[in-house]
Amino acid sequence: MAISTTETHYFIQGRIWIDSDKGPFLGFGRIQLLKKIREYGSISQAAKSMEMSYRQAWQLIESINLKAPQPLVIKTTGGKGGGGALVTEAGENMIATYEALDQAFLEFLEMKSKELKL
Amino acid sequence: MAISTTETHYFIQGRIWIDSDKGPFLGFGRIQLLKKIREYGSISQAAKSMEMSYRQAWQLIESINLKAPQPLVIKTTGGKGGGGALVTEAGENMIATYEALDQAFLEFLEMKSKELKL
Image (cartoon, rainbow over all chains, first blue to last red; front, side, top):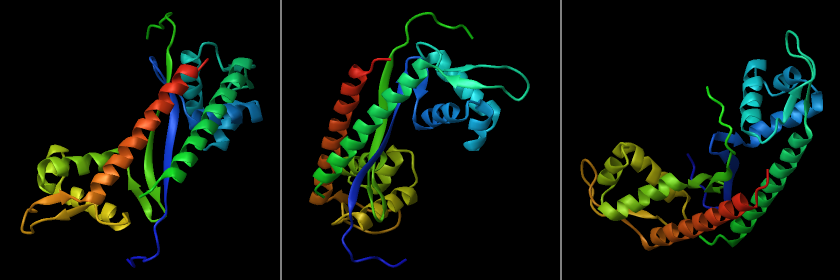
């Protein structure tokens, strides 16, 4: 492997998630799933778009709904293969809360990367 | 599984690390390794205390030294099984820089956890 003699650049990276005393609640992946359900109005199509099984997606939604103050996703129709689904108002608020938090975190990382003197 | 009717408490968790354009540079685990080398003056004893092999520890140190502006750890004696090692002044400064960053991140997480309204 060639060793570069050019100066190395450093930056701070990270990830955050909302935890709860009932276990992990919401992180980047679960928020993506909520947004895909909002986009498609369907858990199975949302799951497919994220290359996960319907079963995986539904287990994530159940985990989220169980820990949330109110359900974030509800099924609008039942039936084989999963019917329609929608993100509730509580779900919309949760997406907005997470995105504001994520934005604040990105700003923190950017500020700390600029301050970094190595 | 019993569903608790008590209120759920939420908090923000996360992790950060220093990345570089030459690849991952320093995170919590590597800083722990530096601190253990400082404590024991030996890579093999530091490795043992962290339940990793000498080879693993040395590969981490090589990766760190290659990406750092100056070496953070130097061997003071050679020989089979690894001789003495010490954390350089640059290494001490790096530990201090990382710990200040980590402290600022903990304060960010605490502040955002308090602000969280779900």
